[in-house]
Length: 348
Image (cartoon, rainbow, N blue to C red; front, side, top):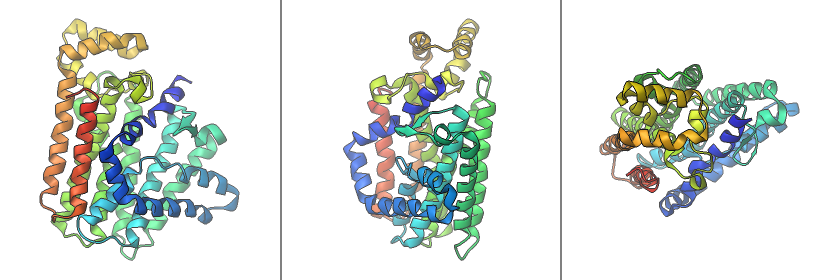
């Protein structure tokens, strides 16, 4: 139940910050017609499933949140040339994969609510929900196969495998205080950054981007995705409950090691390390003040901020080889926006 309550509010934590930002509204306004078209086409996919499960798939497909991946498809395409109908199809495919992963995440976390409503598993049970998630994965690949080239289908299938593998690695490492920094970043790249990279790479591909341009967009997506997840992890400790919309330290309560904790663990004295291990293994909210004091002592928060900024700089650098377009400017704006959110959290 505690995991469910934590998951309930965590789903909307970043969107709260985004909605308060004029910069975010500017970015969203520029792609709103595209996002509306994608949302309409997502909902329309229900007709391609068995009528007896239409209610389940419709419920799953109308659960979109911030739509970051469709946004990246749109802006990456516009950084190269004008969008076409294929961009909508690509965005539908990638968002469907993302929604499927969320269904499976909610089952793993025993979550009862997501984005203000019951999760599929809370509404219909785990057995049905895991199969609905499987159906969405399969349908996404089927849609990808409708393109005249097999490149997109291969890429979607490979990305889906990577994301699911990252989720397995993260699940296996829950409660493990000894995971390495390399393992942590590997999971971030697989679980979060992979779909960001796919969205950017093939958003450009559908505008006939040249190989170096596609590689630049993929590098941008990977760097932005890692920075975004690092920010999300820092929010768990650095935000306020009114802004984050959850009890701080929820990731620790779920047995997830995050960057600030890893930094403090690796620089702590032996007694401090043992104390931190105890807090991690027996987490309660009452441990948060002492945990924060230890993080501050070892500059874990500052170093986490620096790590995020490093990835944001890498994302901007990747864009420097692209044409000077409104799409490129908007992609750059996303990195600036994320930097603003870090500052708003008091990390800078």
